[in-house]
Amino acid sequence: MELKYQDGLIPAIIQDKRTGKVLMLGYMNAEAYQQTLTSGYVTFYSRSRQKLWTKGETSGHKLKVREIRVDCDQDALLIQADLTGPGCCHMGYKSCFFRKLTESGEEIIAHREFDPAKVYGQTPQESQT
Image 1 (cartoon, rainbow, N blue to C red):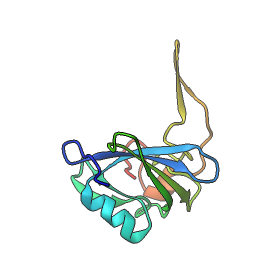
Image 2 (image 1 turned 135 degrees about the vertical axis):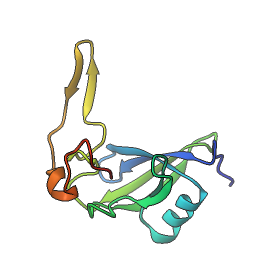
Image 3 (image 1 turned 30 degrees about the vertical axis):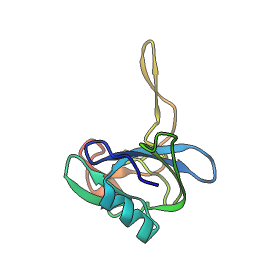
Image 4 (image 1 turned 90 degrees about the vertical axis):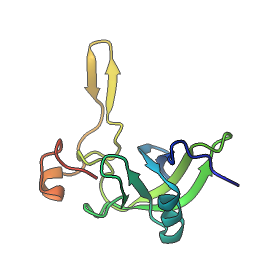
C-alpha cells in the first residue's frame, strides 16, 4: 500500500489503545513514518522546527505503537499506542484535546496530569512536545 502524502506530510491521529481516547494529532513525512515503524515509538515531523521528533524525547512520555491503521483514502493515519507517562499534552494533560468549545467560549474538561514546568523547565505556552 502506498500512503498519500500532501505536501510531503500525512496527518496521524494518536489514540490510546486501552481507552480509545484521542491523545493528539501530529504530522509525519515518509522518514518519520519509517522511523516509527523501525523504532516502535511514534515519531513526527515538526512543521515549525522542520525536523523529526519522537514524542517523549524531552518529557519521557513516549507513545509505544500497538497498531497503525490507514483511512479509506490512504491519506490519514490512526495510530493506537500505549502512553508511557502521565500525559501526552505539553500543557500537562493526558490528551491535547482538553478543551471543549461552547457558545460562551472554551471550557476545560480535564485535569492536569503533570506540571509542565517541572517536565520541560518552561511555562506551558513556551514548551514544546
